[in-house]
Length: 228
Image (cartoon, rainbow, N blue to C red):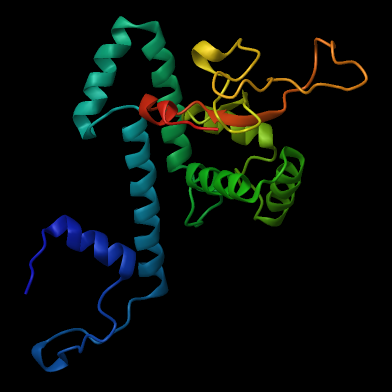
């Protein structure tokens, strides 16, 4: 039999649940009652709560209670860190605030999940705003769901997940980014950055042939790996 540490076992239980064919030993005192809906709801709520706090701690490079102390010290020495603290406080508030009373999602987890669906589905800003408006009206009154793409993007920007459009080589060789930002042709294949119009090949201003959305990831390692 192979033994695992507690953290690995906990991860397996959260992801896969308990062994479905386990036999309850009722004669040895094990409870036969099934967990109530409220208990399951509270457990799901706890998991979402934990995940959001863990994500915020990772983003702001904090480690548990000690991280708050480190953050306080840095705050006193830097106005920039002061702005970071304001963002952290805002995000923590959204991680604590339910979308509506008794909802298992908090505002932050709901926004992150919806924006993830937007990106996966390639939804336009307009269609996403239309969905948000409908959900806002559909949910119980006094819900705190954002009602526009703009409001969602402000929250995502605080997480370090804003984006800008970055031109790329039409053949996928490179991005016109960083020290290549002002280049006019691809360094590898020589293709022009701009569309060439047959009617006016000398036209200086043309739309780029290709662009990609370059995310401003909080961790520079992710940003370094960005490819066309």
